[in-house]
Image 1 (tube, rainbow, N blue to C red):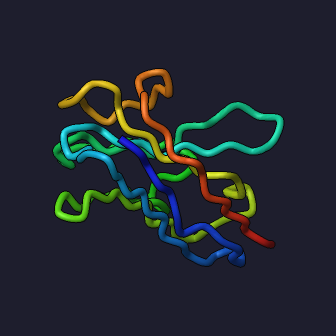
Image 2: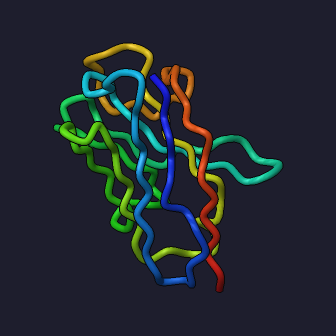
Length: 125
């Protein structure tokens, strides 16, 4: 499955963005999907994940209450709604699909086999 992340951009602190992760090649409706982010010189960081059914979600403490992950099976797309953005949210954001179907919303990068190319999010102060 190929993943395409989009929706990044430049926004002022306190603003909002919605990232999209679209799958092509085949559906990822049976796979959990996660969002991760990375800044130069640092390790990739877990942001949010959603189970294959959409019934459970998982968030990093740093984004709880501000970010919401959701999925639309009909569109084969997962979204990350980001509100109240802070300068420290600046990073390249990646979406990824779990290697194994029918699992929960894991935060472990090693359990994700399919990665998108990343989209830049820049939050100015």
